[in-house]
Amino acid sequence: MVLFLLIVVPMLIEARRAAANERAQRSHGGIQPPGDIAVYRWMQLAYPGAFIAMLFEGALRVGPSRPWLLAGLICYVVSKAVKWWAILTLGPFWTFRVVVIPNATLVARGPYRFLRHPNYVAVVGELVSVALMTGAAVSGPLAVVLFGMLISQRISVEDEALASSARHPPCSL
View 1 (cartoon, rainbow, N blue to C red):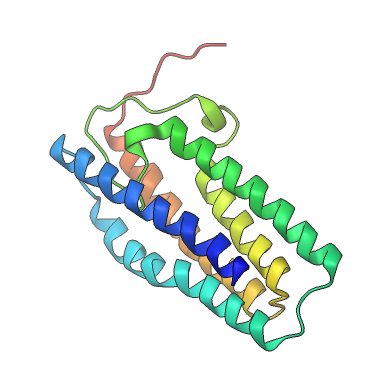
View 2: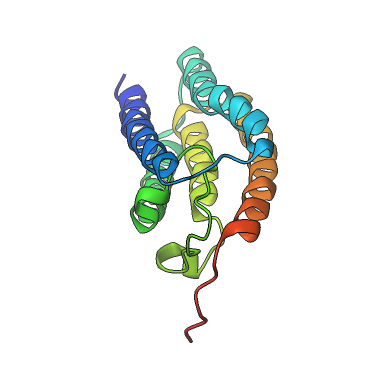
């Protein structure tokens, strides 16, 4: 139950923030590229579904050993920290959907100085960490691979949308 709450509560907080940001972006002319609509529909099902599957598999198993549980917990905390660093850096531009405001400046600070898509790296970290914490030896790797494929499609859509509508800030070295 504790693990369920550890996963679900942040997910609900993130969903609420994403929805508010999306409303604000759309009110400022933000548009969702057509290529994101199908990918987002699959992600809407796959993201919570992956965690549910891992929790279910974990409930059927004896559970991971203490070192695997601790490794998963550490990975989860680090992944959430990276994700929230990305969320806070993007501010009102962070959403679950790809929504682009024409002529918005591309963000190049925070974790975006080091990674092009830190949020997606964090999502993969969340999946791996929950697989470790639940001992989900089947659904965990499957979730990482399948959701990784969705993330790959999403990155293509996002990069194309951002490249066609964003202004790039001047390079500051």
